[in-house]
Structures are given as structure tokens and as C-alpha cells.
Image (cartoon, rainbow, N blue to C red; front, side, top):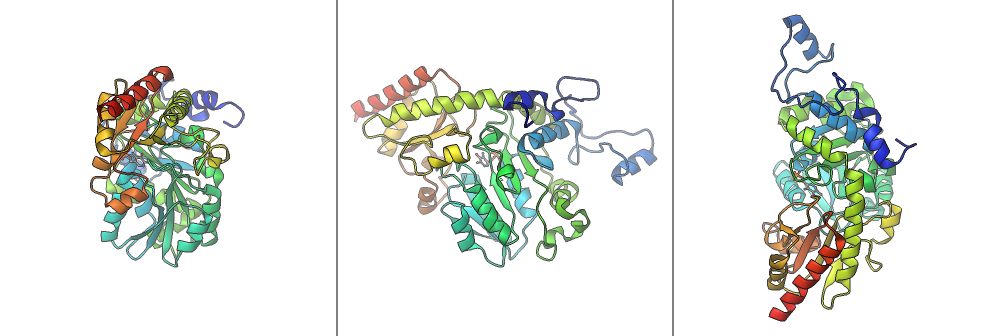
Length: 415
Ligand SMILES: *Cc1c(COP(=O)(O)O)cnc(C)c1O
């Protein structure tokens, strides 16, 4: 992987071939169960004494192919696919935390993750929020009960950027792992494990799939964390696996029992989507940069995009994001009414609650994604009454710029 460029490595990596009948893509093993010649063989599979699949919720070759490929891209020691991004996040956190434990999380999070942290309160797992995950904030919020630090590398939609190396060091000094949700960055912009993170989670529903045709999630473990088994009681049973205890706890226990496996056909669709991740991200980031710069010229429009010179996290574009700003930009229209008018008159954007599609998608987050979130929490996540979120696609940039500019002008004239 290191020796070739991103796209070459992606298409010709170790895990991109070697299927049983020399297929160029993994076959879709769309079955519930696998039948054996005799009972002895199945007994061996269940006892992990011979390699084999028994039941798709526990293991499936199409899922394994997708897992291995993402694992290779992220430089992990193992990956586990899940039914959705939320399933991946819940599994990763529940594998580490029990009642009485605490999590430190960034404030500018995906709405679903904020809601999950509320749910975890009901299980006795408390979350303390930092404005952004960096060294100082982690050091400040660590307690004897902390069991995980969680943040989005580029938060969706607030666009704050984690200081991965600083946060990892602060967490590691206290014996705590760092979990990074890298959905919006994708492995094309950053490989958090190489920056010090211990666990990476993805919603593959977004940029990894890219075509908007399958929900999915992934947990990738770096394999380097030294677990203190007195402290991590959820892992005690797996102590004989040492650093790999986290992965075994998931694979043979929690992940299997929560029942959130990815559908084989979704793994296949996301696998073929992944093939073009590099090309898509290149175009998406270039389009987003051009559109953000064009919108920033318009009077009365406040644009939030990472490559804009005055962005508070601008320095991280070079430091952590491979020189790119990602595919999401936000702008404030002035009022909710104006935001709705602009959105409704766009010709080349779909009004949809998703990101990472090849088609440009727009939404008014305050009235949708954050409608069940309190005002204070919503604003802390960088969402205001007049915010429009744009997930930039791969259309021709001139068309996007013209479309947005005209929609904004028209909304002004109507006022
Ligand atoms: C969408 C998203 C999720 C949740 O993923 P699903 O696949 O929808 O469950 C988690 N984190 C981020 C940053 C997301 O954008």
C-alpha cells in the first residue's frame, strides 16, 4: 500500500483479489446459513477449529471481503462490518463501557450519535462533551471513570477538526483508547490509526459506498492498545488475546449477540463503490472548494468550509487532511424562510437527508436532523435556524456555482 498511490493500492491491494473461483469481485453470498457434509465438520467450525462459515450474522465471505479491504486501507489489525454506522458506533462503545463508566465526546457530532449518547445515559453510561477533541480538552475531562474518548475527525456538519495525535496522547497517558469516526474524512483524506487513534468507525453508507444505495458501518481496530483488564471489565473474559481482546470481544461476543451484521448485498454494493473512492473524493473536494469560494463572495452569505482561509480549523487541512477540505460545506442564509426558498429553487441538488452521494444533496438541518435536539446542543453542533448543509457531489462545478448563485439571488429578490 505504502509503495503505490492511493488508487493503485486500492484496486490492486492484497485484499482486492483471491476469491474462491478467481472472481474479480467477491461473490455475493446471499444466504442465511451454510450446510455441511456431516456434523463433525460443523462442530469444528463452531469450536473455531476449522475455518468456515455457519450463519451470516456470525460470519459471511462477502462481508469478510469488504472488511479486509477497509482494514487494509486504514492500516488496521482487523475490521468488523455492521448493519449501519450507528450500529458500528454503538458496538464499539458498548464493547468498552458498562454502567458507571464515562465517555468523553466532541460536541459537534452527527445528530444520531448525540442521540445515542442520550440513550447510553439510560444504561448508566455518562458522556461529557468537549467543544472539540484535542489534548487540552481530553486532559481536562478525564476522570477515573473514563473508558473511551470519541470524536469525529471532521465533524458533520459543524466542521470542527479533531487533534488526533494530541488527543490520543492525552488519552493514552490515562490508559484510555481514542475512537475516531472518520466517515466524513474517508481513508482518502486521513488514516487516523496512523495518527495515533486506536479504533476507527465509519458509516459506509456515505462516501465509501458513494452511490447512495446501501446502509452500512465498519469498525477498524489498530491492534496496538494495551488493555488494563482490571479497568476494562467488559474485556476480562478475552484477556488471553492481549491487545486483540477488543476485536475478539466484538467478533465472538457483543457484535454477534447484538445482531447488527451488514447485509451481504450491501457489502457487495459498498465494495464496488469503494473502488472509485479516490476519484470521487478528488472531484468532490475540488467542487466543494470552488463552490465555497464562490458563495463566500456573495453579500450576506456566511460560508463554513475548511479550505477557506479564515476558517478556524484551516491549518488542519494540511496537517491532517491530506490538503483537502472534504465534501461538506454549510452556509447561513439569513433566516429559515430564506434557507427554504434557496433549497427549493436549486435545480441540481436533491433535498435529502444523506451525505457522501455522487449527487449534490442539500438539507435544512435545524428542521430535520436536529429537530429532536435542544437549541443549545444544536448550536453547539454548528447548526443554526438559517443553516443550509450541502453535501457536494461530482457534477460539473460551473453548473453547481451557477445554480447556487441564482437560487441565492432569487431568494433575495423575493424578500
Ligand atoms: C451518517 C453518519 C453516521 C451514522 O451512519 P448510518 O450509516 O446512517 O447509521 C455516523 N457518523 C457520521 C459522521 C455520519 O455522517
